[in-house]
Length: 214
Ligand code: C5P
Image 1: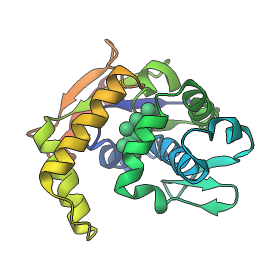
Image 2 (image 1 turned 135 degrees about the horizontal axis):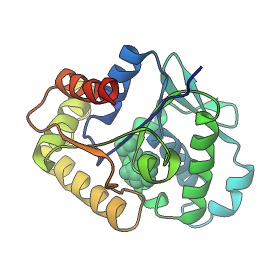
Image 3 (image 1 turned 180 degrees about the horizontal axis):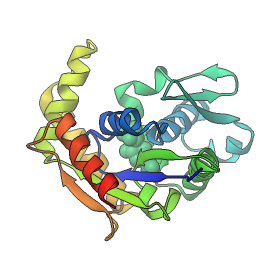
Image 4 (image 1 turned 180 degrees about the vertical axis):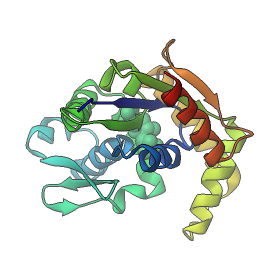
C-alpha cells in the first residue's frame, strides 16, 4: 500500500487542527497534532521548573498516541490531553519550543509516529523538518484579527473569559517567537492557503483539489 504524507504548517489559530481533521475524514488517513507534543513538554516544564526541566526530559517518558483521530499525550501514564489546552500552556509551549533539546525530542516523537503509515501532520515545522519529504505541503494562514477572533470565540465557548485584545496580543507574541526563535517556517514548495475569507469546509475542499490533482 502506498504511504501518503500530508504536511500542514501555519501560525497559531489558523485552523490547522480543524482542516487536518476534515482532510483526515475525507481521505481516511489519521492526523497528528504536533502542537500537543510541545504542549505536553511545556506542562512537564511548568511542573519541574522552566529553568531545570531539560535535563529531566530523558526520563520524562512523554508520549503521544492517535486515538480515534485525536492526539492524546501522556506524561508517564498520566493522560494530560485536557490539561494542555489551558491558555497559559500555549505561551509556555512556544517558549520551550525555542530550545533545541525540546525540538529534537518532539521531532523524534513525531517522525516515529509517521513511520510506516500514511499521516496528516500539522504544526510549525512539518513541511521543513518532520515530513520534509511529504508529497503534499500546505501553509495555512489568516490575518491576525481573524485568527484572534476565532480563538477568542473558541475560548468563550469553553467558558474562558479572556478579553479579545489579550488574545490578539498573545497570538502575535507567540507567532513572532515561533518565527524568529522557534520552528515556524514557510517553505517555498508549500501551497499557501489564506483562510481569512474562507470557511473550514472551503479550505478543506481547496486542499483536496490539490491532493487529487497531483
Ligand atoms: O499548535 P499549537 O498552538 O498547539 O502549538 C503550541 C506551540 O508549540 C506553538 O506556539 C509552537 O511554539 C510549538 N510548536 C512547534 N512546532 C510544531 C508544533 C508546535 O514549535 N510542529
